Length: 459
Image (cartoon, rainbow, N blue to C red):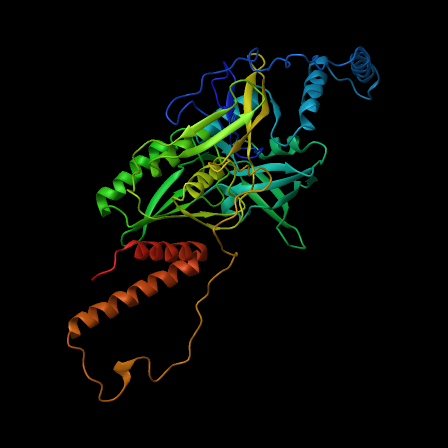
């Protein structure tokens, strides 16, 4: 989870992993209402009755002030007090987890832009893992996606300088920049033995998070690239437009591949669009008010039509919340590869007018009570990363009864010709889709099978 402005109060969020472009906002009290803000003074739980508060010893405080003074007076170059104090605060958070961070004014401004779906950069979501800068996912139609950057890539160098394993946050800051400026990245693809170098141009990233298109007559693909403030309402609007144009769908493929997460409220709203009842997600933590539970309201927009959800190792955080909700409520079949496994919630707590603390304060759980932290969601049907290619087949003399000499004609030749033409067109469309996107073609085939299985037998 991540935060979002206004920063007048602390907000609980579940977003993507620590990203140069994507930490997102708070869980609301319901899918349609904002959570009651918790101020910094009320967010710390008091010690349990009968226990003494765990306070630092006087010697520890003396050691800290002594080290501070030694650095200020004796370090090889002069460091002003404000910089040294900010560094000390950041150091407190660096050892906690990859998602807690100290936000300065620019960090707060960047976070606000990203949750609105517009910012300047490469359109790549990254995280710190084992002191390495790892790509979670490139965003759709971004410079990163067009350059062929993939989930799991490790960024080794930025503009020829190695990523500092002790200060990955500084490297993340380097990915940002003004539109039109260039940056050169040296990356190692997963399972590759030789790094590759790519030069990218930063752009103003304006994300449209929802796309709806027809895959086959009666079947739609809904692609959600990330969860922004308007994602749930945008989904409702675009799906309604598709239904008005094509009729109620027989089934849909919900594509969440390489979706790095975003606003939890948006993920809850999307889940509510496809569910009539049931728990969507719950959170548990030590902070007062962090234990929350979100349930669906009546009104499945698809009226129970089958769903297949496509995921991969770039599906993270809020996207995993949606996947887990649809899986545990037996609303959809999950296909693809195991998801990223970010199952923790961050709260943004304002420190002053220009600084805020983003702190991991809770874990989230799927409707079955499962924590996917560091584990991810295992699909119902696993799909390896394959590419389909058309191959030439040797000619055959006899393909069917109609090729045999002196065969009897069908009693309804016009219907036969129409059926053959429809089958040929469907096969050609499916082959084209498979060559372009093998996993999506397989998802469509499974979806058609689910539709056929629901049809009642004809007496």
